[in-house]
Image 1 (cartoon, helix red, strand yellow):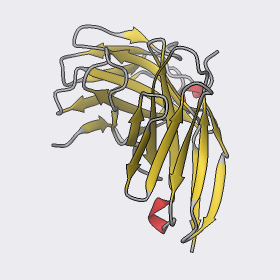
Image 2 (image 1 turned 120 degrees about the vertical axis):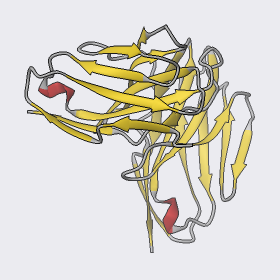
Image 3 (image 1 turned 120 degrees about the horizontal axis):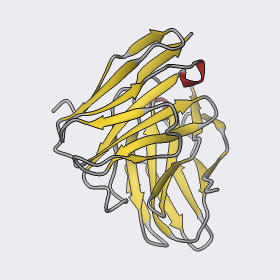
Length: 115
Length: 110
């Protein structure tokens, strides 16, 4: 099993450009999450999907959209990138978010630089 | 605002010494507390999840305790080794939210 995979690993964008970060998991997990990690800020939840067909906002959703394409895939889209979105983005999955004590499994991260 | 505080932010420990650090959180409406280990250039990996007041979990030389009434958890590392160098994150589940602390960065000195 590959676990949680993310593409790309690294991306440079100009302000105003759009892009989609891809995430896939092969663990048959129901729930998937997108976080951003900034120096001194810890991990902050952008959006999550408790199950296929549902998405909800997290702590910092502004400037992002998500799509739960199927049970395996959860993408994060930046429609018009801003320098404030320069960050490292982590995707995670867990078995079932209805029971919040379950462990999350993280992808390797995507490092995004917006100029 | 739901805050999860970790202290210290950074810690240098001599190889072979034991150490511990703290995660503090609001004690009301507690659901679960997670500890993750995050090595540089890798992604966070789960260490423990604790749900009950008084919980103690252990994995090798690493152990954790939980006090939900006073709102804190301790992570202990016995006989630190170079491979323990990492950032240790705690995350609180409460009110259908998951909030991560900023982590404790542990450096093991040879």
